Length: 174
Figure 1 (cartoon, rainbow, N blue to C red):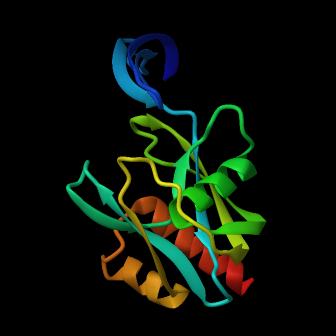
Figure 2 (spheres, one colour; figure 1 turned 180 degrees about the horizontal axis):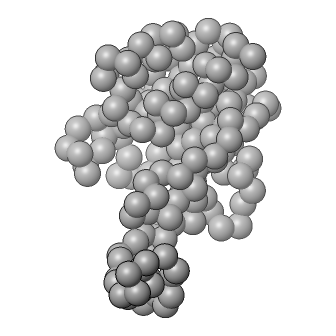
């Protein structure tokens, strides 16, 4: 399949919806709507060697509060590390002098062009959250082993959080 032209259908502050025309194997051109996103960062903040700080965040799209890692959209003018430090501070109040990459992942590649860059943060110093007026976020400190168990038993349902916690657990062990 080859990708051809794109038509912008919608643009918001954070993403665009475009219609792409694809040349398929059968020779027929078909259109597909996708969301173009500037990318994002996600952080697994280690409060100490065994505990992490996750967040409880109200998600109107699913109609409830989820347990997640701190994360957010990239500002097109900042580095990945600066974005991770900014999001960590805004959502948890913590600042960190130590960030290490846990790698990258595609969020939902069937419809969404968003690459998330994952980090571990250590050496945390507490501070104040800087939430946007529409954000409802509560930090929640727990054992990493408890968070991993919550991924397995369905209490943590957010895909980026599950992937990041498994990567952080592997990172911590090796």
